[in-house]
Image 1 (cartoon, rainbow, N blue to C red):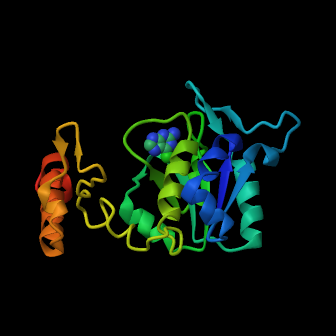
Image 2 (image 1 turned 180 degrees about the horizontal axis):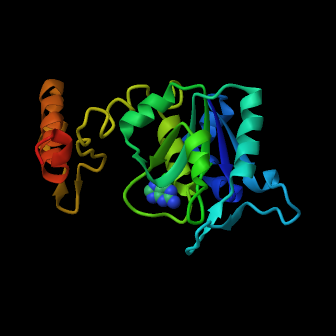
Length: 226
Ligand code: 6GU
């Protein structure tokens, strides 16, 4: 998979992809991430990428021309499955969307800034608009980092234990069960006896019940009985 991220703050995205699982996925060649500085596609001397809103009002608007130039250049080099705009008023990201994106070949992510982007970008250059939740970030970069992290770990070969993504919270609309490791007793806090029993049928049943209980208590919306 190749992901091109168009951003005004490429430095902000260096670190999220330089550690642990993400770093290994990159070095194994399972994913390529290209950070593209939108300012490099500005046309005037001042390298301007935003301007005042027509009709007035507070806040600058990202201009269409640099965005069109960068997306057009990328599309001349390969075809893209999706051109995604990261914006708080997009479709809310979830594990299902992550699963869909994880089987794509080439993605463009455009990180929004300022008061938004010229509407013509959204109408003509973008195939999908995604938000990571109902709160507002200063820009799309941290949302892009979260989304890419989530998608990349689903690419086959990225996680060492292939089954571990299958047992994630949300993969079956249930929260994950609690887990424990040594010591079996810490202070006077004990690990549940069942996990020490060696009976894997009972353990699986207990874990499933814990998942259902936790989901009913914390996220009844996932069970469809809010
Ligand atoms: Cl994608 N962008 C911004 N700026 N804020 C957000 C978001 C995206 N998703 C949630 N909040």
